Length: 229
Image 1 (tube, rainbow, N blue to C red):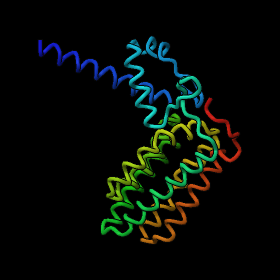
Image 2 (tube, rainbow, N blue to C red):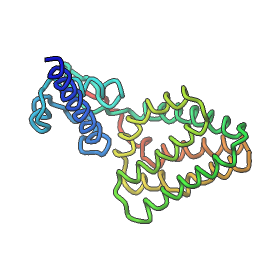
Image 3 (spheres, one colour):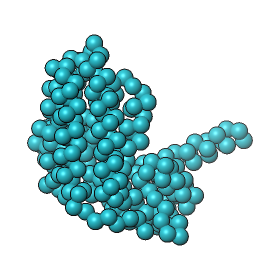
């Protein structure tokens, strides 16, 4: 009996995790767009799981900032206003700026710069090979994630990862040509170069310009200010 109970719990946990991964992927790859309603019944039928399993997954995605409760408690894919997106980039800039400063102060600065250049090669290859949007976004955010990992600051990294979901939604929602400019390896390489030189002032300024340009290229300044209903 005890063995059967443990096996059942394992299956339940697996189903919940699979539902969570499937829903997160659908949102961050643009299958569900900002503002789209997320109906428990429809999703449960599509994933062949219970409504309770879907409800738990959606609750988790609320905590990640990917899902928002609107009027009458209806759950929708989060839609950030232009102000919220600018604030998101400002927080990212502060976190990544701290990461840059800590990397430059580290005796392993050159190793970090080389690792970042390798990440840039992956980003460059994603564009040159005609990879799909998901792969490009992974390579783009992978560079920034690595920047935070190389800082050696676990709290900084954890905080940055809490922004990752909303950032994916913002990127996936942007116009294609502008999005590609914002994610290009060319726009990132000066950051790695400044770190290699140990020039903290230049690195911070370059990072600031990168974030400011990203907001402009993603077309955020030109969007309406609709809130999630």
